[in-house]
Amino acid sequence: MFEKRTWIRLPRNVVVGHGVLSRTIGAVSELHLTGRPLVVSSPTPHDVAGKRVVEQFEDEGYDPSEIVIEEASFDAVQQVIDHASEIDAGFLLGVGGGKAIDITKMAADDLGLGFVSVPTAASHDGIVSGRGSVPEGDTRHSVAAEPPLAVIADTEVLAEAPWRLTTAGCADIISNYTAVRDWQLAHRLKNVHYSEYAGALSQMTAEMLVESADSIKQGLEESSWIVVKALVSSGVAMSIADSSRPASGAEHLFSHQLDRLVPDGALHGHQVGVGSIMTEYLHSGQKGKWKDARDALAAIGAPTTADELGIDDETVIEALTTAHQIRDRYTVLGDGMSEEAAIEAATVTGVI
Ligand SMILES: NC(=O)C1=CN([C@@H]2O[C@H](COP(=O)(O)OP(=O)(O)OC[C@H]3O[C@@H](n4cnc5c(N)ncnc54)[C@H](O)[C@@H]3O)[C@@H](O)[C@H]2O)C=CC1
Ligand SMILES: O=C(CO)COP(=O)(O)O
Ligand SMILES: [Zn+2]
Image 1 (tube, rainbow, N blue to C red):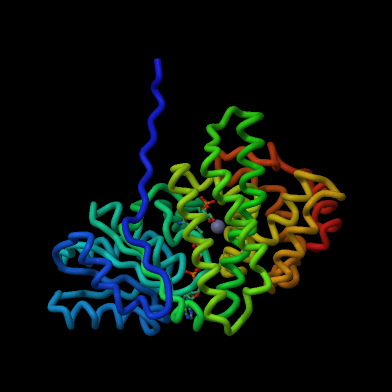
Image 2 (image 1 turned 135 degrees about the vertical axis):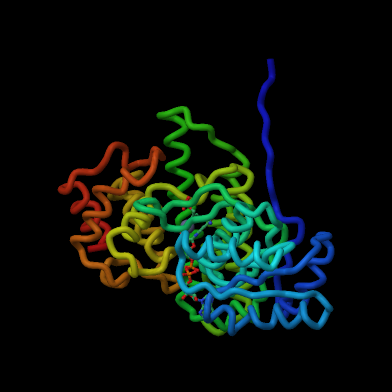
């Protein structure tokens, strides 16, 4: 008997380009969302975009409210939930980097309200995904959350963000290569469900970004356009898979472990990029494609070494040898690397 089922949750409106922040109301009104909008942001994103979104709603006769969260934590998620309940919010808008958007997703999930994603940096591929990652205890990886009903990505705003945020977004995409390899490996070794569509989309997204590397340059708004479209595409792959598998393998486990060891370390995308150089080496050996991963990262100006991440060599080795404990996700790390093997991988690839 045929019993397969899938339920893909995607945004209805994805609005990307120059000045589209001013079209927020248009994108939202098409969704038939009612009631008071609550705009959730963090301090800088509030200044660069959040307050403009609030003003638009005021000008159009809505009665918006806003909350600026200072840190990515479950307390912050609870603050948003409490505020939304107090003002009887009808829907939420998350304005900011990955953390502000994830907090809004998780609050929207809890409240059962619709949510709109307004990224102010092209720094991560959670812009579209139905995943949220907020640190809880030792957990750093994403969990299921409310996917956005719409995404409004203004390339003018994204282009004005610090350049390192854009290179982090590129690295989050380049890491899709190893994420897909890990997923395929887990399928072969552990019979983990593998979606050909999601895997192919994720890999193609990384290939297209790498092919466009020459056009990804600081000061060019076109770069934000290329990167944010890739981030959307990668998020769609996660939505098709109903899992972060297409975009998160051992390189992400390594980064999550770094987040535990060095809470204010480097940007998510930069950490996963460096991780993917080493996990590509683990997949394909010394003569394999790890140099391609390193060169692709270097071409867009993302870190390729522990030094460039600002993380010491010992911490890199500790993260590599313990990363497999992060979650129940089979990857090339298997049941863990020995210290000697970790030092070898990090040294051969020039990470340490
Ligand atoms: N839910 C998902 O599927 C995914 C979630 N993530 C999560 O996203 C987070 C990483 O996101 P990031 O954006 O790298 O970190 P982040 O949200 O901490 O942002 C980094 C910094 O950039 C600032 N910023 C944002 N926009 C700016 C602008 N226009 N101008 C100046 N500063 C600006 C923020 O205020 C913050 O200080 C991690 O927690 C990661 O786990 C990452 C990928 C996928
Ligand atoms: O960062 C992500 C994809 O780029 C999300 O992956 P995690 O599920 O590992 O948090
Ligand atoms: Zn990521």
